[in-house]
Image: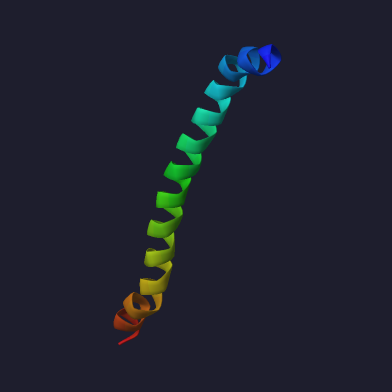
Length: 48
């Protein structure tokens, strides 16, 4: 049990940073997906 308590500070920070970065990437991917879905509509206005 003592080994687990010593690992928490060592492993906790990288896990926290990983979750933070994954959250940011998830938001960016959602924005990118919305932009790609709107792309055909935007291109159709330029073809006319």
